Image (tube, rainbow, N blue to C red; front, side, top):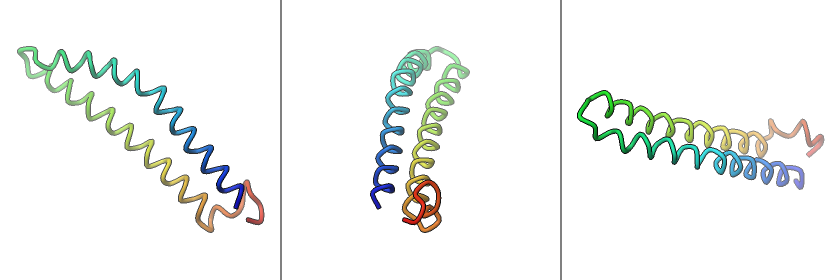
Length: 86
């Protein structure tokens, strides 16, 4: 049980670390793209919407990976490695 709690803690910290690294980069890129979306062209708008949707998709994938990892840890399938005999 302690191993599962520790593994969950490590996963949440890893998720926080990825979000902390990814957040400022995302802010700079989307800020630049957001300013360009009001240019007088459809291409600028499409590029901005693609960038926003792309970052949202990456956030969703990382969050789903975290949820799947936590579900695996706490399920019976996760009772083997690395915490033998839990």
